[in-house]
Length: 237
Image (cartoon, rainbow, N blue to C red; front, side):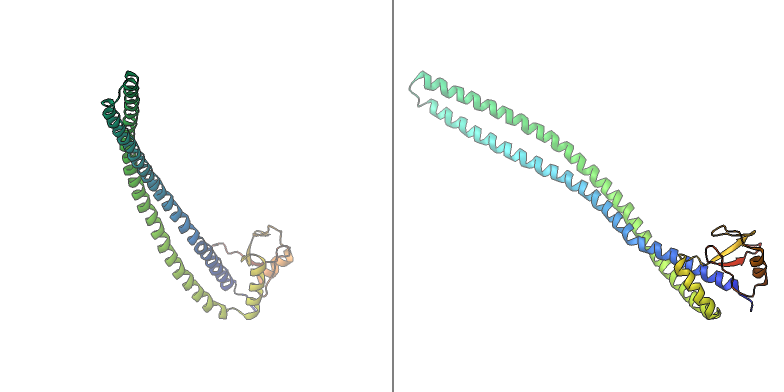
């Protein structure tokens, strides 16, 4: 009987395309997770900048509280000046006031430094917010495109499966059994066209007798090396 290689070739093409689509679909969840991780990383940079501002404000409050404590201490020292009875006590209090004022001056310089830092941090927050907004927009679009691609490929895969199901009954059952057996063993590549005198998959030379049998097209011929179904490739192919 004549072997209709065209149907077998179509079956393999459908299977190859279905496999490729399935592999692509399997990768999409991981790709989406990776994109979400990038979005999360961008948001973390914004949070870190805001955390800097929180720490800056806390430090300024702590410094201001220290300054207020020292000012109260100076007030107490000045009141005590009116009550001391000896020059030694008076001089000692004046020294305490002077040392305390130096601490106040030092803390106030630190407060000014933190205020300047706050301006830089505010600028950093604005810049990171802008970058995050741009990144989120970009990555969200990538996710939308992947979801759209996923839907398109799922529909295409379903259509291919339906076409394949309609094709299978048109191929003799013994050929289908052989096809499935080779499919499992050879990672889905069942057929191999003969180019010149060679199997195009394993590049083994085909014996002249087998070439003649292929031309007769009345039985399935398997490559003696790789075990795939051989067929003569048409010039158009």
